[in-house]
Length: 258
Image (cartoon, rainbow, N blue to C red; front, side, top):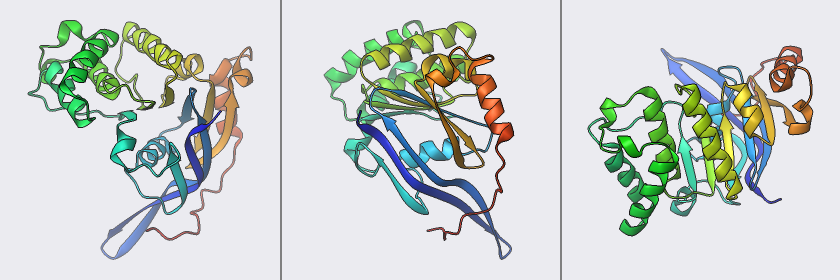
């Protein structure tokens, strides 16, 4: 299968200066990964392991110190690239005075959709994300769970080929999580590619074909579904075992930030 996302020895180091002293922090180190067309690939890791950094690099929102990242065989920066990608950040934010409907129309225009495409696609995503009954509500009136549904709707209104989802199930109740899972399964059936992180290992276990385990900015293992299916404790047990048994030095890479 062709790769949709390709990381090759990608390294990102964050630098900050205060009172003449420079502090460096590892984002990612020598990160290499191929995400194939039509698969759901999950990233698992403890807080600060590099999941969000990985996503932001794939979106072109951060610059690498070394290595390469390509999405659809090109660096992630062009307008054409963004029209093919949908993104749900860990902490989505929308203008509070907008209604759900006007918010989604705005993101549709940003994605380059025509007025007729926005009308058609809006009806689809409102239905798929369970927002039909809430479309006239202002963003400020929404619960955390409904706001998360809006985040998913804006990420899919332009029918992207790739979805990058950073903790998309955060704040959702069990029924909403089920609805989201079923929606993601339908997107996979339509040939979409999903790159996702979540602290809900149970959901990652159900959805993903493969899973990468991150620790201190390093990709320490890639698991296939067969590696956790049928094993005692499933993916959660495999993840815990891998993280606890891996011993990293935590040393900074020898590279200069750009």
